[in-house]
Image 1 (cartoon, helix red, strand yellow):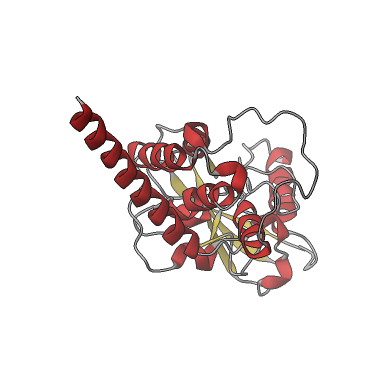
Image 2: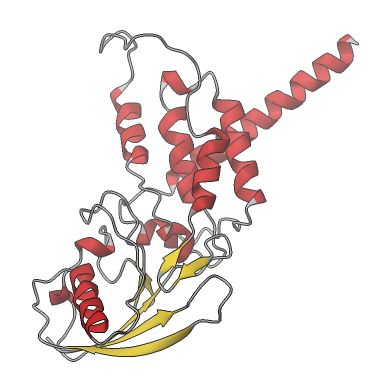
Length: 258
């Protein structure tokens, strides 16, 4: 396969970026998308040119670091996969492929196709965990969990934090990511003691970091490589409003007692 690539190049976070055009030839249809970029970088190094910086790690659809816009779509034209899982047979010989990093204020470009996803880490640090000391691991059936809730929690836990939901949303909303992290704990008994504090802290941090509001267009669900459902956002909203109401009642009770 012979392909024309229009790739975003940017020296650093403060530099002005631009598209540059490259041509690759004799690419196997069975080659993965990232392997194609590796081949391009090898040719650039051979010509003493600066290789293209892009992120990757597992190359198995697990880590989510290979996040790219490909022809205007997060993770490319296929559904339910990450960039590293896509093969070049998905494209036609002689076609032009436009490759860009995520476009979101909260995900600044570091260099070329690499972005800074620290914002997601900060949201998790704000409350996406269980801090209660639980002692040794309990027996498997010591804490019964209804199967439907266990299934929903596992589905939410499949989120890999790649940021495709943010990239797909016209408001750069992180609601799908945050709601998945809230839901995977709120649905289980172990997560209930800290549920109110957790959802308020994570939503507050999300807003503080500049992510937009949910647009209800379902673009995030459509582009999510792990097919996280937007119903998690509804669950998170219920958790958030319940936590706010309880907080106000507690404050009112305290004031009355005084």
